[in-house]
Length: 100
Image 1 (cartoon, helix red, strand yellow):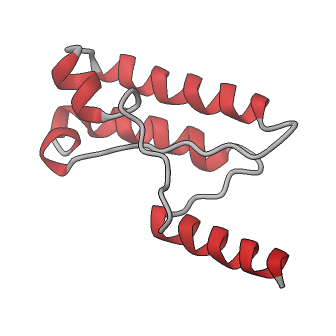
Image 2 (cartoon, one colour; image 1 turned 180 degrees about the horizontal axis):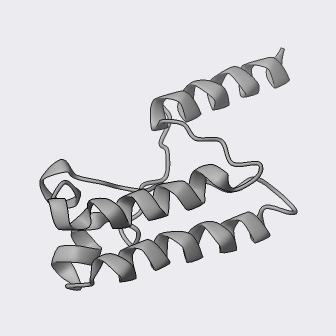
């Protein structure tokens, strides 16, 4: 059984509903989270989960802020854009190769 990290902090429900943050606040938090994790990854890998729920993030007035955040992520060098299933699959395959 594998467990991929799930972030409560960088989660659209926590940020928009729980903390009543604005779209610009959301975009900045995502950017800051990635930038810090990328810096921390100089010594080892890091994982950033961006938890989104269609009924929260898919409000038209939030679209441009999600686009800004995703653009920052996609343009960051060395970032692997993937899903939790692909991360788990990669981890399982890598650890199996190490054990072999």
